Image (cartoon, rainbow, N blue to C red; front, side):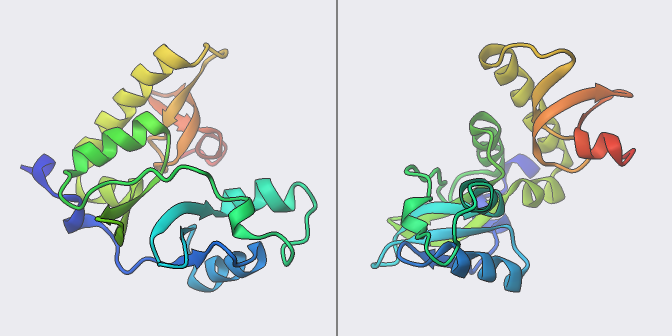
Length: 182
């Protein structure tokens, strides 16, 4: 059954990393050159300690007009890394992503970074799980977020990104997908 697929079967590996003492400029260049959206932050022992995304760099460096060559990763990385075991199933990964409103999960075992799994990875393997992620997001939305005129927070049925969604023509879509008529 597709729900029994383990995270290790779907994850991407190897994973691009950046050290805590690297600069935001260094991280941005790795993202650009590798054409990826996130880096796992590692300490001097190469143990994963966080995640840096393009969005983090925009929100924490660019939007604040800081000099990217002077901002260290350790000063902008989130203090808590949410990860998953390689033995977990993709349904467990999907539920965790939906519950925590995240798109990427580093796969870690005994402090060692083995890979990374994304919403897109899960959706490509099992479109049914995508439906479950949308349902979990709807439930979480009802419990945790105040209603905003016509919007919920969850997984976009057009692109798979998480965020603010509107119900349009029988699907929950993000503003980008609504604008692009997906």
